[in-house]
Image (tube, rainbow, N blue to C red; front, side, top):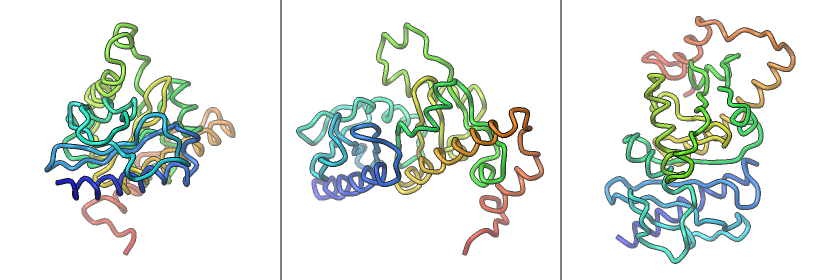
Length: 233
C-alpha cells in the first residue's frame, strides 16, 4: 500500500506544479488533490508550502474524513472542502482550488460567469455557477467543510450535474474545479480562468450583450460531448 501512496504522492505533486506553470496561483495559494477510491484516501498539497519548495514526499495522504494517514506535514487548510466533494460527488477523481485572478474577480463580485460565446459552450451549456455569500453561523462553524457543503447544496438547488459542470465559483472566495482524472481537473481550472477573462472582456465591450443563443450552445457542446461527437481524433 505504501508504494501506491508513493505513486499517488508523485502524481499529486506533478498536478500541483501545474498550478504555477499555468499562472493560476502565486506563492502558497491554491491546491490540488487526487483520490484513490479503492484505498479510500486522497493526496493533497501540504498547508503553507510554496510551490518553489514543494517536493513529492511533502504531499499528505488523508482519508475521506480529512484525517492524516501518511505524511509529517499538515494538509491544506482546504482539505475538508475537498473531502466533502469526494464524498458527495462520487465519480470525481481530483479537485483543484486556485486563486486565479479573473475567476476570483467574478467570485468576489458574486456573479456567475455567463455563457456568452462558443468557447464557453465547448465545455458546458450553462453559466458557471457562483454560490451566495456564506451565512455567519456557517463561517463560525467548520468553515472549510461548510464551503464544500455550500458547493454541493448550490449544485442541487440549481439541478446541476457535477459530471457535466466540473467547475464552480465560491462566492467571495474563488474557483474550485474537478474531473474524473487529475489532468482533467487541472485542465478545467485553466479553462475556467480563460472563460472568466473572456467573459469580463465581453461585458466591458458590450455591457448589454445577450447570453449565447441556445442553438449555438447546444451545437458546440454536442459536437464535443454528445452521442455523435465529431470534434478531435
